[in-house]
Length: 379
Ligand code: GDP
Ligand code: MN
Image 1: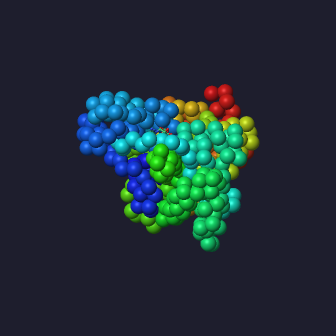
Image 2: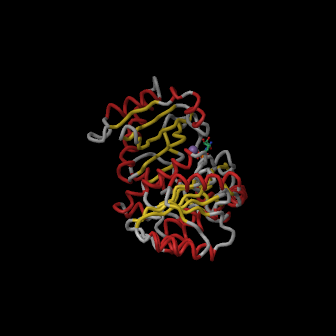
Image 3: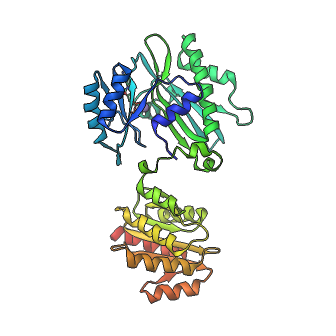
C-alpha cells in the first residue's frame, strides 16, 4: 500500500525524525490561507502516489499567499504519471545547504532490512544509483538483533565524513527510520532529500513509505491511511473483489488461479516469446463474478492483445470459471481473443459451457500459452 507524503511525514515525526511542519490544501484558497498562517515563503507539493514530482512541475516555491494560491491552482490541475493531483502539501520553505538521501528497504535476497545513505541526494538519486553505486553506503540489519548503534553511527559518519555534528544527527535519524520501518510494517522508506540547513541542522523534507500489504491486518491504524481515491483504478477494483492484480508491460493478459501457477504461466509466456501484461491471481474459491471482474480489468488495459486463462481446478471449479468467461464476454464489448486452458474439478462441465458459447478449451498448458502468444503477436 502506498501512502501520501504528508502521511509519511507524520509517521516519521511520530518516531522522532525532525520534519518541518506542513498541512494539506485541496483548493487554491486553502493553500493561500495556509501560507498566510505560516507567514513565510512556502513550498507547495503535489500529493500523489508517484515519485519525481519535482521534475513533473509538482513542487513549487511561493513567496506570497497570492502566489501560493496561483501555484496551487496550477499544481492541482496536473496529472503526474497518470495520477490526477487532488491535494497539495503546503509547508514553510526550507533553505537548503545540502541534500542527502536516506532509504530503507526489505531486501528479499538477504532476508533483511538494508539501510542506504548517500550524500548525493535530491531528484537525481536514481542516476547516482545507476552510474556511481559506490556513492551509496549500505548497512544490512540482522533481524535477530535489530539495528545496532554502531551500524547507525557508521552510516552517519560515512554520509557526513569529517562532520561529527551532522554524523550524530544522522545516526539518530537512521535509528528512528529503522524503528519506523518495523512499527508501520513498511517494505520501503525513503527520505530524499534529507537536507542540511545553513545552520547545520538536518531536516527530512520529503518522505515516501510503502506499507507491506501483508502487515495491514495487524496494523489497523496504518491500514486507515489508505486513500483509495488516489490509487490506480484497476488495482483498486481488483482488490475490492479479492483478486491479486499487478500490471506489467507486455501484451498477453493472464488470468490464473493460484500465485504459483500465475508465476509459472508468466514464465511460459516469456519462454514462448511473449510478454505478460499482468500478474493476476483469481484465488481459490473463484465465483463467476470474480472472473468477470478479472476480464474487465484486463480488457481495460489497452496494451492487451490476447487473454490467456490457465486454470488448474482444485477448490476452484472449472465450470465457475467457464460461466464467468461466458458472462463477461456477453457484458464486455471488444474483448481481445481469449485462449483457455483448464483442467481439474468439473472440467467436463466447463468444456460443455464453453463450447455451447462458441469457445474451445485446451488441457495442455504449452499449447495454450503458444497460441495466446501467437494471437498477441499477430493481433
Ligand atoms: P520529489 O521530486 O517528488 O522527490 O519531491 P521533493 O519533495 O523531493 O522535492 C524535489 C526538490 O525540490 C528537492 O530535491 C529540493 O531541491 C526542492 N525542494 C523541495 N522542498 C524545498 C524547500 O522547502 N526549499 C527549497 N529551497 N527547495 C525545496
Ligand atoms: Mn524527493
